[in-house]
Image (cartoon, rainbow, N blue to C red; front, side, top):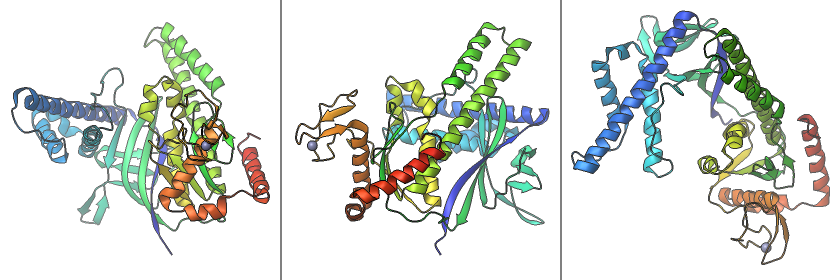
Length: 417
Ligand SMILES: [Zn+2]
């Protein structure tokens, strides 16, 4: 039997008492402070090298950040009261941001604003330590309570049974509620509840049609019009009220309620979609999304709202879980511009053209379906499954009907028939 290691995260709500809440807020501020200071020093050092040719141009790495943390702790004694693992986790995020910057993938890291959009999460790492009763983990369950390093015990609303090895815990405040996200490693035989089948798909994501499958199937994004209306209504109401007043607080609570509802609706919908995709498809190919680039373009709000990243993550781990194959192809692959029939690349294809005619072979192509087919081909090529594809993917009429039936059930299940 092949065991696989799954990295999973469980998000659990909890209600902290006043003391714990104060302590968590203190840790939020402390991590934000260290993050900003580290960044400030890095800028300073960079400048010295650039402007005055003093010192060496060295990279922001673990050794450097640890040196800074050590110095900061000496000069700012309040930091000693903070959780050390969460401070380290936040500087590690800075290192990661820097490595993206060095590689040219992302822009220069930015300061975290302490007032406008303060840090609202900390990550605690699990360490083992020896006591006279044996080895203990700093993050562990004791009955219904979760013990978190120095912070002590927190009582969660619903305890989940986590039998894996806990790696870290992230505490976050979201729309007025507190959550702890426990990341753990689980070694397991993949579930094999689903029969192996021959449905190989490529999926194109877009703003007009949310998901387009290479077999022509389209799934729309969740309908959030009503919820968005309520959110906008309370946001406007809030802006007219006096900040901090009792009416303002009431409105804020309502706003949070609707924002939570939105998050949950989207999450629920994504779970259903991803589950069904995995249930029906043996092989799934998608593009690696250049979300940064997309956000820079004009449609940023709706992109934030959609949160494709979450959906892709769900498809990825469910594929692993159920023994399906999931592959993401290079984001620079010209999936939209390539004709799937003859391979010609149409450089003149406009952004808005939903249907186009190939200048070479004169096939009429549906933009998204064509892209999805290209993504599938590229995914198969990248994984070396092309031969399989030729045998399995040629759609004959009989197969089409079974697929149609399956997709119909799928639609009914997620309420889109
Ligand atoms: Zn063509």
